[in-house]
Structures are given as C-alpha cells and as structure tokens.
Image (tube, rainbow, N blue to C red; front, side, top):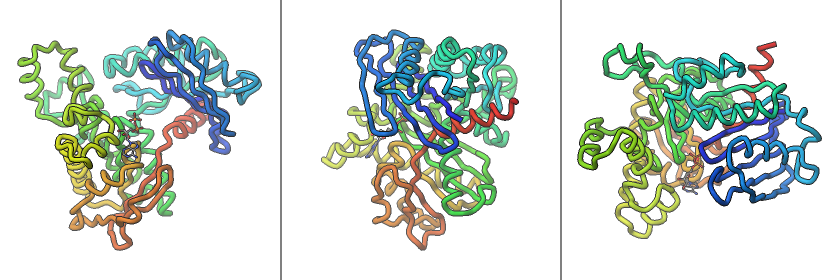
Length: 401
Ligand code: ADP
C-alpha cells in the first residue's frame, strides 16, 4: 500500500510517501515556517533528486496542497495522480484517554480529537489542522491517526498514577501517558529482530534522545514505564524542557517572576533544559563543542543530561528486574558517542559495559556498541517513526474492511 505520512507541527509539516510492500520511501520532505516569512518546501525523491521551493505558505491547508501538488508534479513528483495515495497516516501527539490504539478518522473520531486538545494544547491543534487539510483535498482517501501515546496504554496503574487525589484521574484523565511511542515501538521491535529473540521474551530499555527525550522500559513487548508523563515535560532534561523537578519550583519561580499560568508553562517548556542550563544553546552539538573548549556551564548541562539518562536506565533495570538490551536512538542517541559513554559509565555492577571502539559508530547505521562481555547488550538503532505510522495505517485500513 502507498501511504502518505503527515506530521503537522505548529509551523511545519513533514511528510513521507511510503510503499509499505517494499518499505521504501518514494519521497519525503518538509514545509517549514508556515505562516512566517521565508516559508520553504524541501522535497527529496528516492533517486536523490531534490528541490527547494520558496513560496508564501500561510497555513496548513496551503502547506498540504503544496505537498500534494509536488507529489504529482511532472518534474519533481513520484505519482501520476492523487489516487495513487491509497491512505494518509497522521502522526498525532496525544490521545488522552479517548483512544487506545491507532484509529480510522471519521466524523465521530474528529469530534473526539477536538476533545483531546486540552491534553496537548501546543501539539494537538496543528495535528488536527493537518487532518482537516488532508480530508479537504483527499476526501475519498482513508485517513488514519497514529498516536505518540498509545504504545504506553498498557503501563500498569502503579506506574501511570500520580500521587494526587484519585478523583483528578477520574475527572480530568490526569495520569502519566508517555510519548515517542512509535519510536520506542520501532526500535524495540528492530532490536529483537537483530538479536533474533522474540520481543515477548526480552526486557529492553529504549532511549529516544533528541530535542525531546524519553526512556521506556519495554518488557515482553509492552511499555511498562516511560519517563514522560501527562505532558512531554516530565522525565529527562531536554533541549528546552526541564524534565523532572520539584513541583514546588513552579510556585516559587512563578511568584518571583510574576508569571501567569501560560507564562510558567512556556518557561518550563522553552527556556529550561540544556538551553537554560548552558545559557548557550539547546542543541547538543553546540553544547558538546563548547564543553570541549572549556565552557563550564555547557559542561554542567552535559553532565546533568547524562546523569539523568543514567538514573532512568538504572531505575528501569530495577523496574524490570534486569534488562537484556539497551537501545539508543534519536538525534543525540544515534550520534553522540560522548552522551552514550557518559550515560553508561560506571554501570558495570549492573552488567553494562560499552566497547569504546564500537561506540564510535557512524550515524544511520545499526550497531552493537557493548563489549562482548557485557551482560546487557547496548545498541544504536536509527529510529523510523514514519514507517511505523505507514504500517499502522495499513493495518487499521485492512482491519476495517
Ligand atoms: P527532534 O527531537 O526535534 O526530532 P532530533 O531527534 O533530530 O530532534 O535530535 C536533535 C538533537 O540531536 C539536537 O540536540 C542535535 O544537536 C543532536 N545531534 C545531532 N547530531 C549530533 C551529533 N553528531 N552529536 C551530538 N548531538 C547531535
């Protein structure tokens, strides 16, 4: 099946056109800076042909129109007409309590998606705009929603419940949900394939480290705990998010800085993490190079980041009473030899030993980076969230017939 995947953010739409039968990407691209000046569409075809189109793209509808036009463009496209798109798969951030798995989008589902906006006010509205725009142009094509949260739906209640009055869970659905589900799912499955053991028999810790970062404990194929919570703010220290803090800080800082609720939300999401710590950048490459040239706060940011990763990995070994595999993925997880080395240092008593040479692996290559005597195998696996979205879309459509 040929599936168009759409990942609609507040000012960007990423897309891939995937043939699920061969698992190949026919083309992919990105519309960036929607509604801001200097909007561009970058489009890459599987044969290496690439084009960048700069245009005024004012909203998501225009962005998706441009994507569909280029897909069937005589010079740059890969399809003769839009009917070659057999389905559209949307990456959706937060399913709230409404959806336990990916879903074929119809009127009732669309209404429920609007109800989920309150769970992710920053992410869900652009996701919905992407759906509306796609349905406007491709009304006869099935559209499927694939959520970041649903891989975590089977977490045990003691892992997803916060220590607040239970009525808030019942009234508002306040619980830990977890995110990056398609990525954790992909790399856990791929790791099991690589080692040749059924996923059901493995205990895997998947570390998705990028601008947003989360770690998941996958036992028997099920996410039994994950570091992000009700929102993607919980857990690891991230590019601009604080991760776990004493909730008391929110009151103290809001009080001292005179923050409204919205300002406090923006502060903890956008001004903290590596950016706030280093005072320099949210970007790990810049942090690493500044730390290497003696920038002390960049060094501190790096130390804090890796220490938090180490704590979660150690905790999840406890949660699962051991682990067989640890997998690194995401921009940082796939690329940073230093972060992997620091995060796993001095864990030999837990059965983790890296091989320094193997740990220098090259980007986009699946690699085993642990020492041959390490009890727990450590791997780097490039993530492929779009493939999961495309395959899920196909599965849901086939099941709906
Ligand atoms: P997103 O979460 O937005 O999808 P990515 O998964 O692409 O982001 O990760 C972006 C992060 O990966 C940035 O902090 C970037 O600096 C980091 N990164 C990319 N390449 C490297 C590298 N070679 N070494 C260290 N960090 C890297």
